[in-house]
Length: 357
Ligand code: IPM
Ligand code: MG
Image 1 (tube, rainbow, N blue to C red):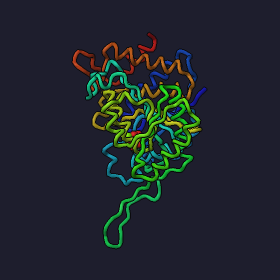
Image 2: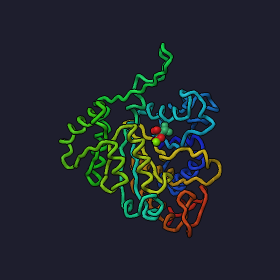
Image 3: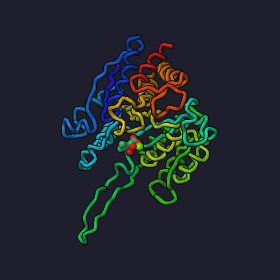
Image 4: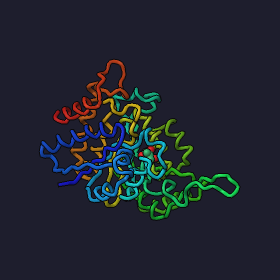
């Protein structure tokens, strides 16, 4: 029996989580897994009900769960709140509390959607990139930080990019190991020509390379990496990078695939794991039943692979998604003329039906 803790969060988070649960219920009803699911609060919804975007109860339930499934956080109604209680603080807080240092963001082109990318199909077809983003340190968490008013009346805003060698090593180790199971090419992305902290990043990764002689290690400055990702994305297999560079490059990589609504992620620590789509809460379409639940459902597949150790069930979910796309079923974000446009719930139902196929 595995404990799965559901944190739907805000905006479309609620709607897409319901579709993920349909998949889990199906697995349960077939006796393929034994799960206990419970649900908690995070983000703006948690703030409204409890005064904080990350209640203590959420942290302790997440810590004791085998895996956390998260929808999305944030929304325009909370944008005016003080920084310390914004919904995003809930997300950053849970990543830190669970020490989720390794964020896996796969960017794969679904052949059925090759036309959905703004780039030419011949550039994006066949791409299969794994972005390994450091998630619990770096400039997102470095101290000192903040905004202070100086005696002369000017204000000073400050954030610190800080990495310790052990923080670099533990995420780099994961990246080397993942590369080993793929095409054995690892590109570490930094800004070592300008930022000392990322020069340390590069040197630390280089020092580890002898342990992985079968992996071809390369290095790229982040500005060049941003360019190469749209110039020739197929050159990449595994990309290893810092928290902020990974945030930016993974959004860029997602657009190669046509829609950010398709991409799942896994955030792994040594004790905990959290799975979430890489897209946000999409306040503009929240509550309308039109959001694409596939990134959320594919995040469930990642949970089967990395936490439940059931790769066959992970593949079954991924295959179901392919079958649905083959059949021309599309939510609005990936729709093109001639396809069948469906809403969130109908897309979830279609995936569940395809699981049986
Ligand atoms: C992401 C998001 C978050 C981040 C935000 C919502 C805090 O953009 O998961 O990529 O910056 O990490
Ligand atoms: Mg982001």
